[in-house]
Each structure stands twice: as C-alpha cells, then as structure tokens.
Image (cartoon, helix red, strand yellow):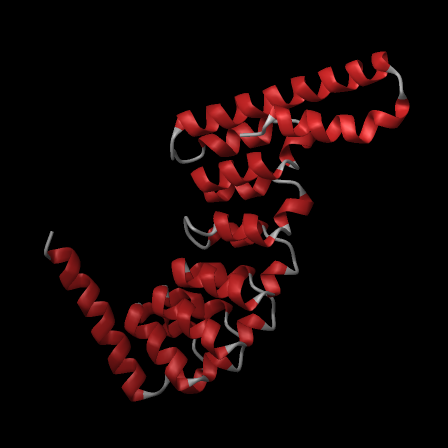
Length: 215
C-alpha cells in the first residue's frame, strides 16, 4: 500500500518554495485522492484472490495512469500473469514486473518488451515453465541450444519455433520427441528419416496412449 505520510512529506518538500498555501493544499488533496484510489484498487485485487482472468479485466478497464502504476501492475500479474498484456509499454519492459508475471507460466512472455524477449534469463524462465513460450523469444534465443532444449523438454511441440539449425540437432530433436512423439514433424528432413529418432517418437506416442488408458 502507498503511504500518505511519505507522499505528503515529499510533496511539501517539493512545494515549499511556492509559498502559497492554497496551491499546496490543492495539490496535496489531489495526491491524497489519487493514493486512496490506488489503495482501493490494490485492495480489490488482493480480495479477489488468484483467479484466472479477473485481474486482467480490472487492469484493462483502468485508466492509463494506473496501467503505468508499478504497484498495481505488480499486484495484477502476481494474481494472473497474462494481465501483463494491459500494462503500459514502460512496465512491459520492466524486468521485475515481467519476472513476476512469469511465475504463473511462460505465456506472458508474449507481452514483454522486445528487449526482454531477447533476455536470456527472462526467456529461459519462461520456457522452463511453458515450452510453447519459445515462439515469443527473439530469433537469437530461438537459436540458443540451452534455451531450446529447456523448451522442448517441457513441451515437445516447441521444436516448431527452434531455429532451422537446431531442428537438425540430434539431441534437441530426441528431447522433443521423447516429450511428444508427434513433434517429429518439426525436425529436419534428415532427422525425420533417422531410425533411432523414429523409434523414440513411436515409443513416446505409445506411452501417451497407455497413460490415457490408465484413466
């Protein structure tokens, strides 16, 4: 929550040279009202709990001023990561905000700034949680072996978004088809004809059928 005392103290510090009580009073009252509104929004977010979508609807409906308020946006993405979509451009490029959004899963990477989608730590955090987030990474990181391996181990179909070179990388493709045998379709033509990889893919598909048969 924001502290009225701290804000008023800072405000008076900045306005002390005006030597005009009416101006100071007017500006102070405006700030107090603004802070109370912010606190009401934060209180609503907290009381709503972690519910899918609700903070997104709230953030989407707020004025741009509040969409650029770090405290409000942090609260929203903590509740529901994809709320990042409605944050200001400035906060979509804020490393702390984006890291908080990715706690849910990797998909909010889509709404991060171009710079953060090229950030190794941010992208790796995203694909470990949801491999499909690889599609939102920069071209350079979609060609990074460590990032792509993390992505396909979590979600085999992420192979689709790997660079052409890595779709021809034997270890990467094996990791992808082990997670999901059908990911073989995104491997290079050479590896699609590799008997060991085909066998691994078939085993993975059969394994998934057996899992469903257990229910």
